[in-house]
Image (tube, rainbow, N blue to C red):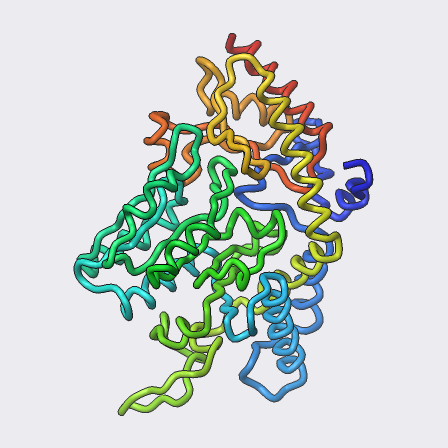
Length: 407
């Protein structure tokens, strides 16, 4: 951790200098949304001040410049996730929108009555509810890969759950509630042996290390911009070209058409086939700036720093009397979900907020996982590469204060 330029990096994030209740903010709510570097903020400001014009539909200078930047951002995303070509990169409103696109479009084409979709018990609601709606609509069946007592997938159950009627697996790469890293490569391998496509929810993994969709061999990969230091309202669906070509359009409107007449409509080529209407082109370009910022720091350096931070924070938290950590796996990112003995998580969260420490309490949009553990919610502290050991120390001191107040 000593050679990581943490002081320089923190200078790039204005909100990290904020004061909360007259003390310096400790921001440990990164699983909900990450802060934005000045490089992203300045990109957005410059686009609206000096370049704004709708993309793809005009011969004017500004539109041409914005279109060039938009398609450049698509290429940046392609490079970042190592997709085969930019036609496989679809800009959406976020990971939720990307999953709904696949659930609707893939579902209409390939799911029939009696078919099965498999998810895991640790999924975010965004990777549960779209599949429930699809299964209700198609009279299909939603099956669940369970988790064990430390929040890891029960992989021995996977071969049992995969049948000749399984049409898709949708699973998170990293649990948003616990930080547990799932063995997605093995899931994909077993699925592909039975010709079953796999969607990976990368909302909590895209910001923590190298993603190579070709090596992973996933069929779909989704993530949100605001989780990876970019703006809100923008996200990505990566899909293998063979699937995207076979899927019908998700929405109708401008830019996704080739030709429209009242006798029938033909559709545009990929990726525009799935980008109806005026997209969030400023958000897409700013997302590209966020990914370039990460590339400049170096994903290997970020990964090494976060591994050390995860170890430091994990050891510090485990030393606290009366703490129960959920998902305390050896394979995890620095997301810690826990309860304090005889203290309601909301009470703890309110006290920590008074101390200038931003965490999150509740079910974290993972109610089935909470039901598995027999709890109503947890305290969640989620960290990233701009957080420090000193902030972890303040967090532990804050937890001690909470225990003293409610002890």
